[in-house]
Length: 370
Length: 130
Image (cartoon, rainbow over all chains, first blue to last red):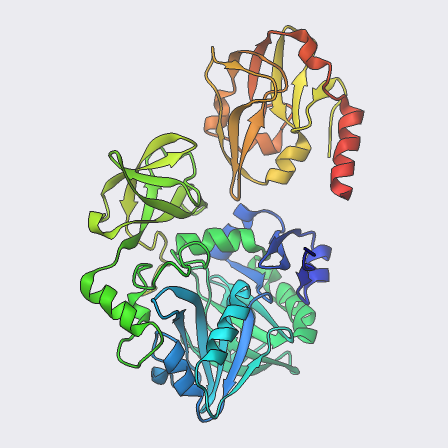
């Protein structure tokens, strides 16, 4: 078997020059960290961080049949999107298991862009192409598209001098803008950190320039380049699911606590299976977990116990810098009804450690509703 | 990467002092750098015994959990209690205040197959190339 070559984003040389420690993620060489995960995490919570997310996939879905295809394949209601709006949504298989979680941006009357997980580009494409889609042009523009994100309380202050219209943007809105006078971009006020921020799509050839411009523009505000290490600690504190951890083919969006993004009645794939789960109850539920000693980290795969009964497993666990203690997400038997405050145990390296179920998200930025 | 002369080194990136019956054990500068920011250190208790090449504790960084292996066998006579509150000391001073345990060495021949600083540095250099 020949190993596939590790892909590089258009920012690979930039990362090396900035001294990033690289790691492989979903087949891409990506920055794990620059100056350190904890410092980058703090920068995003208190100032701003700049991320390369060019590994992620982008599909254009265009034509008179575009909305019908999205309604048939995605759990949220794309029909509710006005032009210039974005939404978080799920793609399910027939049995209600999750193929991917993604963002849909409505760019024009019959024009949508999907932003999908890098590891699921092929599966998503297959699912879209397999659905009937008359009068739709489907394009995978991932290779030619770069994505950078500015996240943190100062994000708007950093980006506004380059694109004044971002100041008036509301959350989950999307615009097209020329940055620095000439760089064509699509900007969404979205993110994966629990902070305010923007995700900026540009042509691959413009990625290095825009990254440099943003680094310079943010230097005075404390903006730092951030790697996937802090992206993971940030999203975990905000209890945002990561595909392959909280979501997979064996897990439905209802089990993952994502019912708000499942709109019944528009005939999406997997709807019948999810309706049964809705009516009869789910087999497992995602919960937040805090180990009581505040020391050892409950990591992915560690068993969860209630008395002598195995009740589930941890899906993500890390040291949570904002709280200076470990936190975890995991699934427990739904029937067990683990409300916040319930006691359970995490098995850490053969030893059971007492833990408490805590309400999600762990972190919510001041003044936010979501 | 720094590896002081006078210490002995294991393939698993631990260092150990050699000049006394009680040896101090820690992880190398290279090891702490690879682990990244250390947030938790789990160590044995005084009186426990450790066996050469077996794990005796755990170091957790934000991203990963790693076993720490004993470069020599012996009984634990001291553990670095400061690390419970300040695990980042292992990053900041791996050969000094970031030491992990002290053991009374049961078999001095345990030192024989350990590396000196030059040998360790060339092993690390080779690992980086591969």
